[in-house]
Image (cartoon, rainbow, N blue to C red; front, side):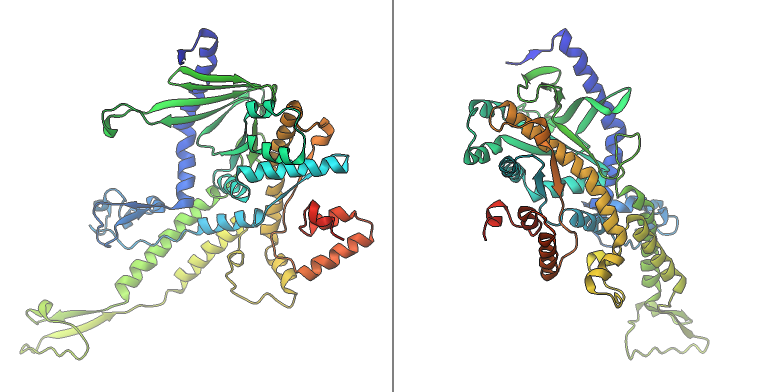
Length: 480
């Protein structure tokens, strides 16, 4: 049953509501602009204008007025109709290349427990929990949102009644089944707002997820009003509020002193909660590239056709123009002058190339990362040549893997703490440490990988570790 918030609860509720309001006014518009530049979505329009197109693109909003404003084509100071517009979304393919390099294949969660048997059980439970939450798809969504917005949050939702009722079941089969009660959810920055300590930006006192719920009034969709809902997470406490009414709340018995949220910065930004994204630095150059490509399209349109200046011939505008066409007149002063035809513009081409190279430098993603080979790789072996050519992207990927890895490890630690308190998997705090092993972003020659594994085994590296690096699980590594 719903009831109005009492005095003790209304104060914090107002605080979180104020956080959401400020977030929607100041932060959300900027985040939506970043997503628009990445997505570059099509927006249908009622009138196509002079180009005959039935859509606008999101990145067109930053083009100069000479191309015609998106909402008012008449603002073009040189033509009443909409000019040729070319938008090449260089941002999206670079972001996709970064995400593919970081989470090209499944990651491995390696336990640091002291007992080998406990390590195996922990890894099986964690693998089951992450796979049940979405597996590689979840990690891909996490990386994509982080690259676009600059940061992303992971929320651990616990089905505590299920875990507490199963207390005492500790077989591997039951643990894998109960791992479904541990679900990880990606919270995009447009919905999740932290309540940070005023003295330390790294300390989170609370976390709120805002949402708008469509109204259910039976008066037609156009008359419905949206309701505002908030999920508030505080240490050991969860509340759901709709329109200032407390709908539900619960005290956590499995994570009594923790907020089940892991904050992940794409690239760490000193003394700031928000991280650095990959879209924002590219926006000015993307705008410049779109402007120059549109300029070139208009130049090509105007110069790629022969045009004729006719003097002294009445009705020439009604005469067809085509191969073998003969024009006749009795006027000795008549003349026909042909002009036009596309002409090369080296400075324009050089400028466009310079803008693309600048985007390569800022993003660290060369065209080679997307499979575009413009020159020979050199006399090195293919693997070494690729690593040298992609050194900037590989280094950037490794740096980001550390920030994303800390967030994943924190969620794993919370999972193990909850299982320990539920009596399902007893662990010491020292045994809950987890290391995230990321796959090599570049394809590795299987023969070189086997030779390296054999060398490690000869040096005394444990057999289990060697087999894990080769991609074999605990069951397969036991095969002689």
